[in-house]
Length: 226
Image 1 (tube, rainbow, N blue to C red):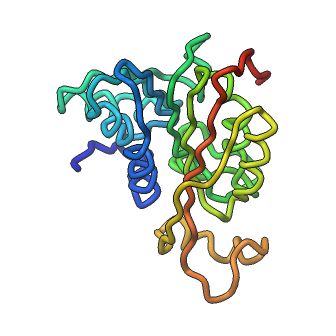
Image 2 (image 1 turned 180 degrees about the vertical axis):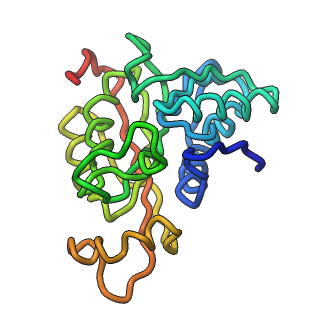
């Protein structure tokens, strides 16, 4: 699929394809509200909006990504609301039937990346959980009762931690898809550091990607603290 991708905006890769495949297995009623958090080029927003009868919102903290997502959905004649902001901040009290997200999850540096640097598309702190933990804490408040979260990330970023945090937030969470992926340029550049942290074993040049699904019960009420 052709997607306009300005410099610094994440290029859809195997993780995006894995998330899209998991999305296609989700049953959604007509009129379902879908949110794509960290939309980047809008790849997942495009996939979601191609499903008949759904209403799609996409959000990204990068203005370049917002403009790219608007362009990539508009040229396909897809009606997608794309907003600029950090994670769920611009959404107020809205709730959604499905949230999809492919957040930064690569173990990177202790110091957050520059606000306008390309690293912020992937660098997620020393343990890769700088953004993942925020999503686990915040997402339940933006799910409608009976709604679901689909989140993709690397096994190097502690899948069990995500499952625990989502469970503690009142969601029923499990891994619904797995796939091994050869390292791309970003991960190859991080190999030495990942081995030093004990996250990568000698001789490995790939990682396992997972999609976590977390469901909110029909009777769940209340909003979680940020």
